[in-house]
Length: 338
Image (cartoon, rainbow, N blue to C red):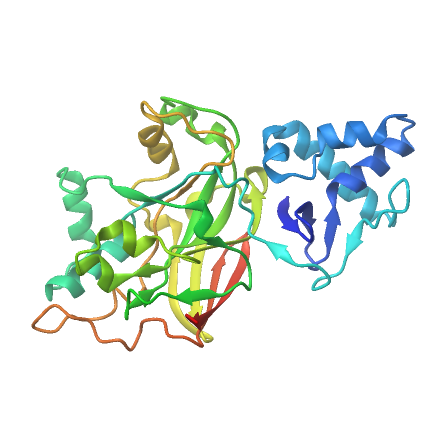
C-alpha cells in the first residue's frame, strides 16, 4: 500500500492511476455497511487520519485500510454523511510523508560500493574500483558512519529546494529511507526487518563546499528544504526485498544516477541493529542508507587545489527527479534564495 498525506493533512492511499483514497472516511463507510453503530469512532481508532497514529496501528491498520480501498474500488464514492472518498490526481496537494516533527532521520554515509569508489577516485585522482572498496570493508578499514537531518528541513513533492547562500556546490543524493513501525532498542540483526514499516524516498541535498570550508558536515546537510521526501511511504509487504530496488536521478531530464540497492555495503538489518544499540527508535523514525554513484561529488574531478568545477552541481532553475522502483518519483524544483 502506498500511503500519502494529502490536502489538510489527511491519510490517503495512492492508487496506480494516481487517484487518492481518503482512508479514514472510506473505512467509516466500510463499518457503516457492516452495521457498526459507532462507525466514525471505530474508523478514527483503527484507520486514523494522522499518519503516525496509523503507523502505530501496525498490520491491523493496514488490513483495515485495504478493506477501505476495496470498497472504493467497488464504486462507492461517498462516506456515511456524504464525505468524498476518492480524488483524482492533481486535485489535492500531496505533502511529505513525514510521520511527525519528532521523527528522527538517520542518514548513512558512503554506504554504496559504486558511490564510494567513484568518490575516492575523484577526490584522490587515482582510480579506485568497487573491488578495492570491498577489500577495505573486509579489512575493517571502512567503518560505519552517518549523521542526522532535522525533520523541519523536510519538503514534499513539487516543493522547492531553496538554494542556500552558504554554498556554490549544491548536490543531490537519491536514497531509500526505511520507516520504523514499532519501538525498538538493542535490536538484533535477525529481528531488524520486523521493525520496518515501509519505505520512502529521501533526497539528501548537500552543500559540498560547506563541508570543506570549515562549517562541517552538519551544516552542509541541514538547511531549509535540504530534505525532500516522498511522494509516499510504501508498506514493507508491498516493497518485498528492499535490497534490490533500482534507483535513478534525473536533473532537467538528464539521467545522472542509475544504480541499485544491490550495491549497498551494509544493509538495513545492520543499520537497525547498529543505531538502536543503547538508543531507542520509535514509530516514524527513519534510516536512509546512502546513495549510489552519479552524484556531482563522485563524478567531478578535483583541480590541483582540490576544487570542483560547478558544471554538474545544482543551480536555480533545475528540476530534480528522484525515482525508486516500487515507490515512485519525487520531483522538486531548485529556486534561488529570495
